[in-house]
Length: 193
Ligand SMILES: [Zn+2]
Image (cartoon, rainbow, N blue to C red):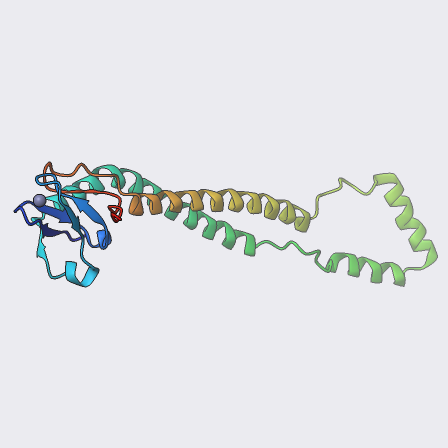
């Protein structure tokens, strides 16, 4: 944020930011109350030496970049994995398919003579129906359920990461003001009767 020099009558000067418009400051040198002018008048003041801005960049790069960069990378990785899992899920066949094999078997049985049906029954009785397999669509349903859980967890992680990114961007740490330069905001002096 750009900073400006607000002079006091005594020759001291304040370093102010536009967001301080309308505040009342007390001069460290002469104890006079100095009103910060409205925003458009602040813009006409002399810009302050940019040492403070340099330090804010330093602060950002050291403290907040340490949070921002890993959080952003984590958010991007989570979103990529969510995209991949979503693509995987879309390829699953979770609805019960019309089983072509069953249809063929039904038509075959309909055409059999009773004696042939008896023969089929005996062979099933002898050999059994075989191992019962989990149908592919049931396996896909189970996979889709696990993918939903994974995507929900990753979504929560993405939100937390983006929250940390946002905090790193807007939660600027308070910087120590250069001594004798920046005034303290004070309450408006009460009007004397
Ligand atoms: Zn002063």
